[in-house]
Image (tube, rainbow over all chains, first blue to last red; front, side, top):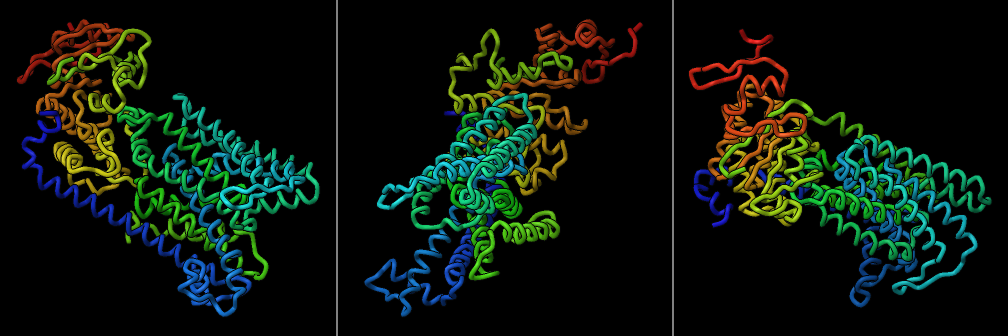
Length: 380
Length: 233
C-alpha cells in the first residue's frame, strides 16, 4: 500500500468536503470557460464587422458569399460584384489576420511575462522587448533599403527585406530579454530591479532608434517614423503566412507551460520544491514571448498597451489561473487590436489613423471605467 | 530525523536556521557535507520525486492577485498532476483544507485573508503535497497565540496520522518544549546542542545561545521557560 492509498483510509469522513471542493472548482472552471467563449464570440463578430466596413461598405451577405465561395467554390456562388472578392480576401482578411496574430501574441506574452516575473507592470513594452525590436527593425529598414530580391517559402513569395527585418527585430529583442533573464537568475536581485532594468534597456534601444533616424535618408526616415507609429499597413498574405507558424508554435508551447507557470505564484523557492526548474522555465518562457512579439512587431510597428491591459482585464474576470488566463488574454488582445484598427480605418476614411491612437483612447477609457466601477470582484 | 517525530531548530536571528532549512529542501546547495533522505543523496533524487518526499513551507508566503484559496491549496498537487486535477488531487486538498480548519474560506481571494489565515493556506498546500517529511521555516512567526497553537497542533496531527516527519524552525522556546520531540539548538551556524527538548533547553544553553537570563519553572502541565531581565537569585 503506497502513502496515498494509506492516507486514503477514512476518506468517508471527508466525502462531503471532497464533493464541495470539486463543486466549487467546477463552478470556477465553467465561469472561466464561459469568459473565453464570450471573448471568442465577440472576436468573431468583430472579424465580420471589420470585413464589411472600410472605404467601400460591403453587406454581410456579400461578405459571407465571398468567404463561402473561397472555401467551397463548387457549392457557393460568389457575390455579383466580383471585385468584392479582391477587397475582402486580399485587403481586409489579411489585415484582420495580422491584427489577430499581433494582438494575440502581445497579450499572451504580457500575461506570461507578468506571471513569470510575478509583477503586474510587466509587458513586452516595459521589459524593453518592443523598443529593442524597434531598433532591429530600424536597422532592417536602413540596411534592407537596397535589397529587392524575394524567396519562395511554403509556396509564398517573401521579400528578403522583410525577412531581414524580422530577423534583426528578433535578435535585438533577444538581446534585451537576455538582460532580464540573467538578472532574474540572481537571487539577490529584486523583481523591481528587473523591471527597472527593462525600462533602462528600453531607453538604450530608443536612443539607438533615434540614431538610426538621424543618419537615415528621407525614404528610410519616413518608413521608420510610420513604423514607430504602429499600424497594419504592411498586412498581406505573405506576412500572415510567415507569422502564423511562428506565433502558433510559440503560443502552444506557452500554453503547455501554463500549469508550471501557475506554481511560480507560490514563490521561486516553493516552486522549486514542487519540482519546477524555475530558471529554465523562466528563460524558455521569456525567449518564446520575445519570439512571438518581436516577429509581429517587426511588421506592425510599436503597439504597446495591449500586452499590459488585456491580461489585467482578464484577471479581473477569471482570476490568475494561467491555463485560462493565457488564451483569454490572447483573444481579448486580438479583439482590442481588431476593434481599434477597424475604428482607425473608419474615422477619416478612405484615409486611416495609426491604430495606437485609437487603442490608447478606447482601451484607456474602458480600463479606467472598469477599475472605477469594480466592486470586490467582477462576476458575470 | 525519524518519521513520526517533530524536530525543532532553535537559534537566534542570523544563526543559520533558514539556511539549514533551504539546504535540506535542495533550494541552496551545501558547501560541504551531504544531506540524504531515505538513504538517497538529495542531489541525486529527481525534482518531482524529491517534491513527493519533502514539502517546504517558507517563512514568507507568496501569492498572486486574484487567486482563490482552493487554487492556492491545489498548487500542492503540482508534482502529481499533468493538465487537470484528478479525484485524488481533490481528496488530498479537501482533507488538508478541512484539517487546517479553513474550509469556509475556499472561495475567498487569498489577498483578502489575514496573516494567520494565509499561513494556514500555505500549510494546507504543503499537506496537499503529501510529502514524507515537512520542512517548515518559522510557520508561527506571523501568528497570534491562538493561531500558533492551532498551527502546531495541526502539524503534530499530520505528523502522527500520516507517519510523516517534520523539521520546524521556531523562535518560541515554550512552543518547542510543548510540541517538539527533539530540539537542535544552533549557535553561529553550528549545532550547539541536540536532544530531547528539556535536555537541550536549560538556563545555561539559553544564556550561551541568546545571551539572556532565564529560569525553568514547573507548571501544572510540565516545565516552561521564564525569561528574566537579570540573573535569577
